Amino acid sequence: MTRLRLALRLLHLALVIAFGTLLAGIVSLCERVVRHDLMPLRQRLTRWFLARLGGALPFRVRVEGELPTQPMLWVANHVSWTDIPLLGALQPLSFLSKAEVRAWPVAGWLAHKAGTLFIRRGSGDSSQVGQQLTRHLQQGRNLLIFPEGTTTDGLALRTFHGRLLASAIDSGVAVQPVAIRYLRDGQPCPVAPFVGDDDMLSHLLRLLSSSACEVEIRLLEPIASESRSRNELARHSQAAIACALQLDTPVMLPTEAEAA
Image (cartoon, rainbow, N blue to C red; front, side):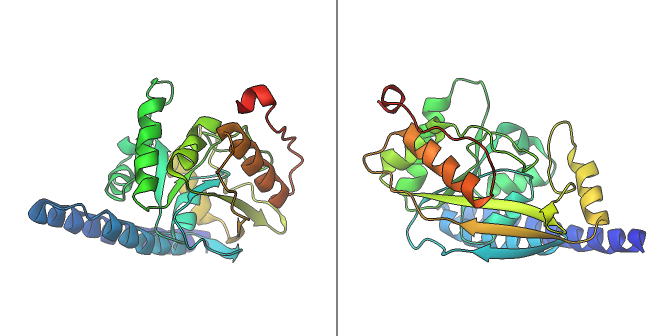
């Protein structure tokens, strides 16, 4: 039964990815012909594709809270690569991702065509990345970042990097905190986290072989960026998400020196 379930889920996922690849190729070709940026269309199609991709994964998703009606900088805790299709299905979004994802077969190309912005850790290009994020938000496009900078097992939060939130201040948009958690029988799911030395294929096979788990996505109260420092935004976002996830992660608000 487990093998049959895995085979059917792999077939479903393969069909979704194949169709997404075809769709991305068509949009890319159209952009070359008309020589015009089709980013708004790409974002809408990406949302449609990610909803189908999330539907091919063994999750039962529950969403709480209100979707923002204005462009915002979304910030979320990061548990797995599956966060992206699940959150991206909620609203047209672009993502900030580590540069390594760009090299992933198929998925990296699809992410690039969907408008993902890539950052290379330790490359010293934080100023350039910040400018990219600001331009993206100033164009009225939603952007989602994972300010922890890596995935966790969902049992704690890492420090949120304030420099990534500076774009909200520079572009005058609010921050939309989002809390996501994976549960199995009311407890944190041990299968969903994609952490450490895990590789994509092994994780995918474990995930598709398992029974469905619950996913809770909570859209929290937006945080105004006006008159706040980037460290304040980071700490307040982290505190809100930690509270929503019922984590005991201590979150200290920035000192006056840090906020300056």
